[in-house]
Image 1 (cartoon, rainbow, N blue to C red):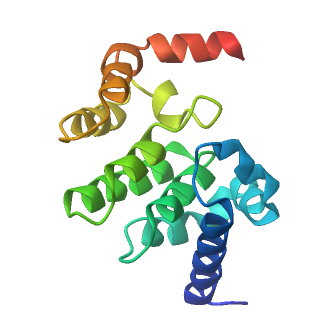
Image 2 (image 1 turned 90 degrees about the vertical axis):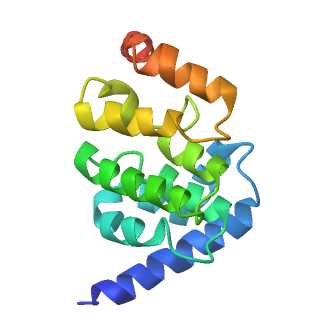
Length: 162
C-alpha cells in the first residue's frame, strides 16, 4: 500500500499535467477529455486530503488550482468546505489568484453545486460572505452570489433543472 505522501505526489503530478494540457479553462468541460481528470472527478473522496494540501501549495499555477477545485466538485460538503476555506486563506495570503478562487468556489454552471444547494448552511453563507468582501472579485460574480446564491434563487433554479 502506498503512503499518503506518494499518493499526493501522484495527485499533484496528475493535476500539473492536466493543467498544462488544458492550458486555460475557457472551456472547462474539455477537462473531461482527460482520463486522469475524469478518474479524479469520479472518485473525489479518494483525493480529498491531497486536494486540500495542494490547493494553496506554493508555486502551483492558477489553472492547476482551478483543476483541483473543479475535480473536487462531487466530494461531500464538509470536505469541499475544508478545501474552499483553505483556498480563501490562500487567496488572503496572496498565494491564490482571485480567478482561481472564483473557479474553485463558484464553478461554471455545468459544474458542481455544493455551495449553491447548501446556501442555508451557516458555514456556506459565511464562506460566500467572505468571498464577497475580497477586493477585485468580478462584479458579475459578486452580483450572482449576493442576489442569486445567498437568496436561494440559484438553488431553486438548479432543482428545477434536475
